[in-house]
Amino acid sequence: MAMTQSEIQTALHSAFSSYATKMRRANLVLGNSLVVLRREAEIAKIAPEAFDAMAREEMNQADKRMRDDLVQHPVAAPIAEAV
Image 1: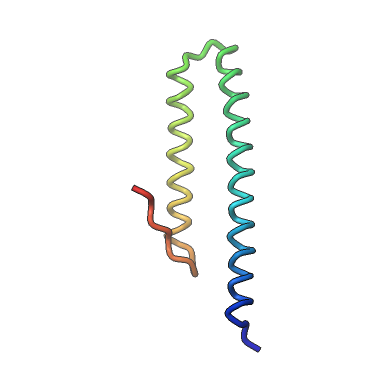
Image 2: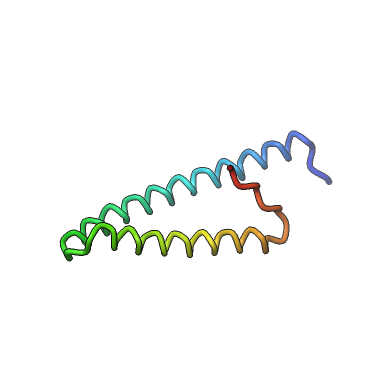
């Protein structure tokens, strides 16, 4: 039997709530890792600019992977980027 509109709404709420929770946790993990790695870079006498450049490069690669995943997603259309 097909789902009702109410059941679909509840399922959508659950899916997006789970997504938001996982993204928040991932951001916390990333932030904590960056704090630790920045401190390690200081101890290793790596210039802050060099650390920032390394982090930016990794961020750009991760962003590209995520954009590529969105383009190839079989069901969901990519969400428009905020300008």
